[in-house]
Length: 246
Ligand code: C5P
Image (cartoon, rainbow, N blue to C red; front, top):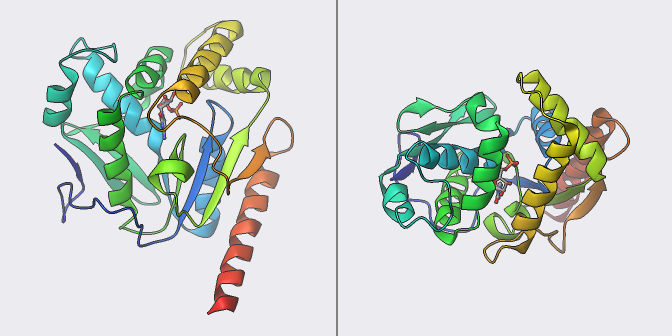
């Protein structure tokens, strides 16, 4: 079973329409989505949701049961019995699986690969999609992922699509891993990113692609602060235009 936090619980929120504003930030692996989304959310007072962490949490839970391949026949039953919760905590959301709070253990290269393998499945994607749509009923949020502007929230108020040079991305992810105490050659990190992007873009269900109405951002150069400030301005302009229409 998968559910939102109390008090409503359950999979009650199945409709597409978010009742609060959503800013969707999509893009390939390590294009800067997390820092950008968190920065924008903090500045405009929205909650920040990292949808990849839910895929990672599901992948970790499955791998602890010996399931690491996407065609494992046990997955539907396991999905049914896993208790996944996305719980608001201050300005972000925590992911809990079977009453265990998920932390940095999902940030390993092994979980990165496992999450991208299970994310090709329609049933896994449906579970995550419902959790995200449920979260949108709680308040305004900035959501980052691969299919947020195309599939999860096609009516999002603002959509961004981030790209960056693969070398820059590999270096960023390598630094993240070093911070977590993992020493992996940068070339291996680059291979992992390229492989995951190819799988994410080539899959049948909700492939990674830029929504037609998403604004493209190349994050290879320029500072994070500038990038966040630009998106905040876009949001303010969007709000002003909407207020003008009313
Ligand atoms: O964003 P992050 O790298 O943490 O995501 C881990 C994996 O989860 C991705 O490689 C991708 O396969 C999957 N994912 C997805 N759709 C999303 C977010 C993540 O398929 N909206």
